[in-house]
Image (cartoon, rainbow, N blue to C red):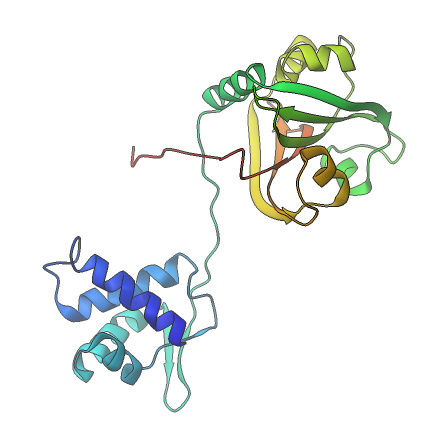
Length: 257
């Protein structure tokens, strides 16, 4: 709780110099607590600071602290129980960010064209069960499994990719995959992706990936799973990408428009 109070006070001090400068004290505190609840920083069912703790941490009156808590309760963000404290009842659910696919695809192709690609393997295999289910395959259906490593123009490896793709017929070979972007080869095979579902997380580098990226086993990696869909919503391509954060950064620019 002490760490949470320190964090909340820090956010409050910053906000009161900017967007909350003219707001009443109770509203300033309510706003900081509300933001932390809505973005999941204070998760569902967790206990939030008491009025007494807020008074001490923010150096405000008991009336100010109570009004801030009352506002949160009135919005059904918290529930207050006499004798046992206040608890968050709002469930934070991360919502996907939607963006135009065309620009994203062109950016990925452009990045590929300015990278050195080494294809580790191309195999025609029965995929793992979870991959097969996402691609809506029968237990015996096969797909192309491709493992690639991308390096920057200085020859430093920054990404390790494993992709699973439904049957292609033209040029899906080790040589062609090293000569041109994989997304271009998919297009040439009539696989037109109209939607990509992408999730970002992090993993510790397992031995094989660590060796290929020339990093220490267990080092932190940015992990991306990208599902490529065609117009009817069917997933036809799955890619797992693992990036060395020392050599690759994932940046987005978003606006209120």
